[in-house]
Length: 208
Image (cartoon, rainbow, N blue to C red; front, top):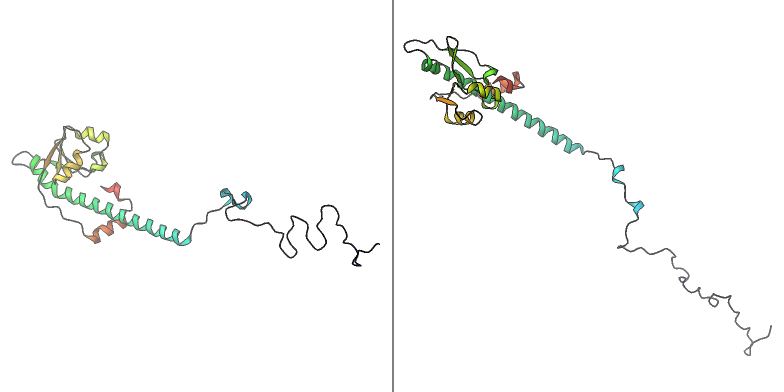
């Protein structure tokens, strides 16, 4: 091989497309640098990396579930207490009204008006009659007045113990409904009586 003027061999030509010896080909990183592709924070997440929500199984938190159960029990206890108190109040109201109502609707000088027991057919009110003729209904429960009971109550008198009770019943009866308000003292049931009744009658709403 011929020598160069300086006595050195000429540089070998690199194959087509390659850089001279010791230099990396164009477009490739220098030796020692990573060939991994760079990722940028603003690049979208690959679809395969997003979990399918249909495959995610929800696991209720045990603490939250326990709190929910405790709350439900507390609400049920309060509701049972309120129902029992309302039942006992209604009973005391009817007991206080019945003697006065009998006097009011009896023949003068007698006590011939007869008070039956509280009946669901009269929305738990006490029917007052004389010789089989209905005279009045004492303190029916407003929430128990159905359309049929509403019609039956229309021609008679409803005896109540307060203005508030009258307005509650008036809201669910016919516009022509007549009322007789008697002033009586209705004792309030004690806490012990309410708790005892609630325990003995879990569904107190059927005992109005």
